[in-house]
Amino acid sequence: QAGAVAWARRAMATSPQDAARADEITAALLAGVPAAQLVSAMPWLGWADLRRPDPAPLMQEMLNTVWDHQLSPDDTGEADADFAGGIVFTSSKNPLPNWHAARPLAFAATALRYEQAVPVARRPRELVRLLSALRFFRQLQIDDSAKWRGVDEADLGGVRTATWETRPSDEATAMTLLCLVETIRSLDALSAAPPAVPGATTPPPAPTTPPPPHTPADRRSRPQDR
Image (cartoon, rainbow, N blue to C red; front, side):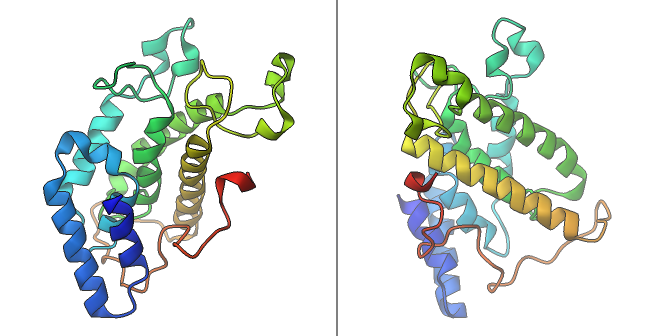
């Protein structure tokens, strides 16, 4: 995926020239991806964009659209409470919440600690929405409560693609894990930072800022290690 390549190239840049070239590639990719398809390029293209001095406003617009399609408990009612916090992608064949929301939300979790992506005043609302989405992803996780239907012990902790599925998916598990890890990293970063003043500006991260988790050389969070 082109977005993953752009992020990897930016994360591994060893000189200002390499970083600048990676930023040019990211900008070109953003210009060529229709807004409706931007979600499918997440989180990689979003992570690459966060490393640029001026992240694209298109990313915030994409996140706003994602949040607009999040289901609240009022939307689901008691009968469909399992779907609360999930995202409805109306263009899909089966417009019910599923694991694909982990793609843009892994990016949203990272963006939470970048003020140029999520202004201070927006953070509380973004965090509440993100935690609601994590509740839905937890609903997709296989745990001890599923043992009554004879699940394999090796499947425990894995994430299903949808609430009606019975087996975990490596891809869904990996992407959900990235979303969770990035949420924790952002919470840790914001907890350690001095109180922010709404409206204040934060300089963009320097090229030496540690990348989002799991650079191409990092193998600590492979799906099979869950």
